[in-house]
Image (cartoon, rainbow, N blue to C red):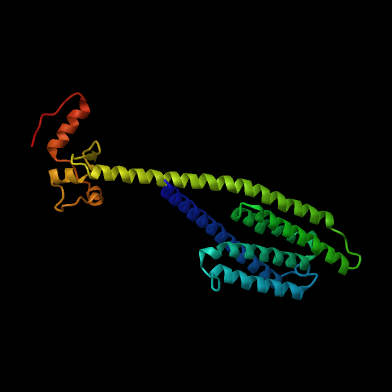
Length: 283
């Protein structure tokens, strides 16, 4: 029993890692595309564009560095592939994304520009990857940095408009997204893991049944109403001599559409017409 439990826990852990890796891969595509769009938009911007209005040079430098970082993460050039480091990589990438988005939002003019709303995406990704307090930590970091950015803009810009209320509402939105996705993501993940585990259990039971049938000395066949053999054990194969090999090759028999010998097929048809009929012994 302990051995079976350990195998089940290991299987569920592997499934969870695979799911996290798929979520992270999709998030990487989004990150790379976002940085590429921002960089292209800056060089083809109109005169009325708000791209980098506060500090154009900082905007370009931040976006270029961000895109290079995203490319490295996307192509896994410099990142180790050890499974034990996956969690550290996820945490580092999400925190770095939050910092870069705040810097980009700052060059746009802060929360009022709407760019800070992009914080919702890394916070949502963190909530899907981590079903714990860590995902709430991402929301807290994003909220604090958004408020700090507004304070800094207020201090450096003369006659600047205060957007602390908007920054606070953004923080509430980040926490709401984090808590919602923690709950929904956990439920979805549990259901998927349960479905996969049940599928594995069914396959295991099917394999066990096949092994039991295989070792029976009585010939066992599973056939369609048309007499096509679906499953045949060694004993039946030896009796009927359907294969030249000593060991049954079930896959080949199924693929070739091997049929029952005519005398057996006739008895099968009689039995299907009347279940009370008992066939006499025959060779």
